[in-house]
Image: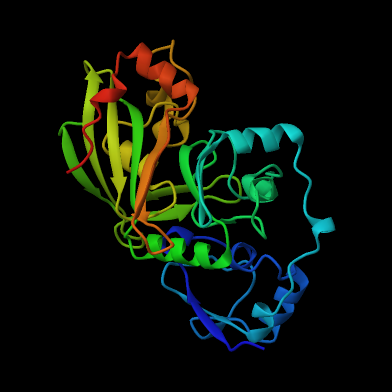
Length: 324
């Protein structure tokens, strides 16, 4: 039997429920067994007893007893079935694959994990991306349901652990593209705005809260604009808060097109001919390869609705200048 482990919560795992954290890192641990380990205090968070619904914060230490390490993987018969259509779509969305990692071009509208009223999600379809590996890949970070773009999966527990460490240590560089309503006053800048989470299940929303909020920092740069009507922003989040980029763009006075939650009517004011979907795309990720050799760099093309908007606004994708 292996020894007790202590694992840290990654930056991108902020606000993740404790039971979902275990589902991500130890998929072979049944929920009933997890509840028992929590009730008996064998699993602790920062040295304290915890419940399955506890929302985690980056840096928290989770005690993992030997029983979890030894938990068997679920039998193949219990693996959720993935439809032929979903399997084909996921395989077609693979941007990069090697023995350690899969980079997926997540389409808008597909949730990464389940939640209230959300039965169809990527986490339940990972078996379709097993390929020749001994186990399905594991999630290491998240994107909002309506955000498209690069999503990394670890093809083993060790690969997932190393990828998560890269996100936690901020050695991962994430770049997003967004089309926003209006144009920021400054062509380039840094948004440093503390955010606090609110709203109930299914109504999750963050708000500015300098006193109780957690620090959130995003760099942005205007690449192109159409008068004062709309702009193309390149954004780099330096922290990983829930809805960070969406809230920060709204705080600039330029909400992301299609983002009624944070921009209200203004998010649809750029023109009736534009798609009414969220215009936020995880364009690229670069980070140390989990094998320890070289740098992993992956770029995802614009989804169809954003490509349509780029054409409508006469934005040239090749004009992307990025950050220095």
